[in-house]
Length: 118
View 1 (cartoon, rainbow, N blue to C red):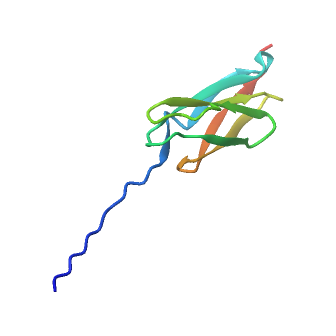
View 2 (tube, one colour):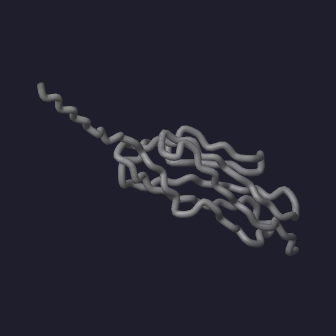
C-alpha cells in the first residue's frame, strides 16, 4: 500500500495598512493661528478592502478624521490629525488607528511647540 500526503498552503486574504510616515513635527506653531491639521496618508497593500474602524486621540486637544469608505487593495486613504493649541508649550500627542488590517492598530504621533509671537 502506498500512502501519499498532500499539503496545500492556502493564501490568507487580508488587508495591510502601510503609512507613508507615522510621525509629523509641526515645528513652531503660533498660538494665534489656532488649530492645525496634518494628513497622514496610507496605502492598502493587502488583498481585501481595508476598513478604518476608529481613531482614538490621546487628549481632547487633538481630533481626527479618516477615510470612511473601504479602501480597496492598492488604493490610498488618510487619517487627519488636528491639534488645537491651548497654551504656549511643547506637545507630543498620539492617535491610535484601529482597522481590519495588519497590524490591527497603528500609533501616529504629532509634535511641535506652541509659541506666542504677538
